[in-house]
Amino acid sequence: MKEIAQELQRNEFVGILLKSIGDGVFVLDTNGTIIAWNPAMEKIAGYKAEEVVGKTCSILSFSRCFGKQCPAGFQDCKIMKYGHVEPTECLLRHKDGHAVSVTKNARVIRQEDGAVLGVVEAVTDLTELKNIRVKMEEATRRLGELNRLGGIIGKSHLIQNVFSSIKASAASDATVFIHGASGTGKELAADVIHSISERRDKPLVTVNCSALSESLLESELFGHAKGAFTGAYRDRAGRFEEADNGTIFLDEIGDISPYIQVKLLRVLQQREVERVGESKRREVDIRIITATNKDLGQLVKEGSYREDLYYRLKVFPIFIPPLRQRKEDIPLLVNHFIKVQNKHTGKQIKHIAQPAMKAFFDYPWPGNVRELSNAIEHAFVICNGSEIDLQDLPIEIRQKENHSLHCNPSPLNTDTSSVRKKLTRDMLSALLDDCEWNKAEVARRLGLSRASIWKYMKKWNIPLQKDS
Image (cartoon, rainbow, N blue to C red; front, side):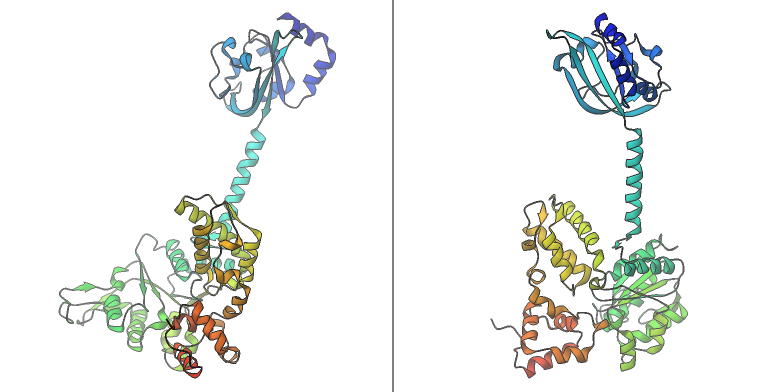
């Protein structure tokens, strides 16, 4: 149609408008021929106006029109049927051949009687936006890396110090001693140390020293010869031998007997092991990492732990702080556990309500990160919406009156004389109920021995088992 081309040439205001618009604009007649091309389109597509006027928009090879490839003929384009194209993100082909990310939309131009005069299309260059997106994603990724090391998550200065210690220890073969309360992530720290060390391609062998009796632990660690004891029907290599050239992680190292302490000291000093029932010494090239929630220094003072072994173990100590001392990490941890549970359960919970988050910050977390993980898992069982609310949390977190029972849960930082002065019969009874009458758990939370709990129960006539 000549009318629209003539109108564009005649109307000075329209010409100025097209030149001043920051977005690319071009106009097509009813044959799909380009009749106007503003300077912004020259910049976006690389074509001068004189290069495209008289040609069709197929020169731009838009990747999407109405969600599909561009049709072969303009009359088949659905713009003629629907009259407009909503903003659509797609690609156009630049003059030099590379793809340009753009958003385009189009409108049909009609006369008063409804007859079609042509089509005007607007194109917005998304290149800069794409670059910003890439930079934001990179920044987010780097922030995630700063706030995470292996399975350990946190941005607090305390956990950042742990990250630094882990990286430093991984660069050597020095024996590492990880200490901290239960549930803080000591095993995760050992995993990370091994995974970034020179031994990462070799085995990481984990042994829980508190789970086995003295004789079983000796056989598990050192192996045994055939016939060494009843049931030893064959030779068996121990965990130290299995960890040869790799790393062995001895968890709950504070629970080993004096006899195992002597044997372990020999391994640390000589890097040799003897299987139970034989005298042959076998060399092992191992990196030893140990962990405990006990105060080994105090055990040394009490005479229940060898001082020479203690100093052999703590060549490079790493303290994992309790969650109550790094509460600024709670939102990061909550988001992480929500993602884990979403993946595990198939739910789509997006976030946690403010009252629930406040309860998390108010709670002293005697069970540390492990307890937080369990709290989120508990919430996923109850929550049916997209947000975890206060009523979805475990009762001990919701009820503030229970918090005082957990104010000093870690034996590493507990003044036991202060606990004894504050402890009452009602407090102990409530804590027994909270721990389902597990005396060992009650003792751990109060920082006392199990024997002390039994004495208090006897003193206050509290039955050893819960009344049915």
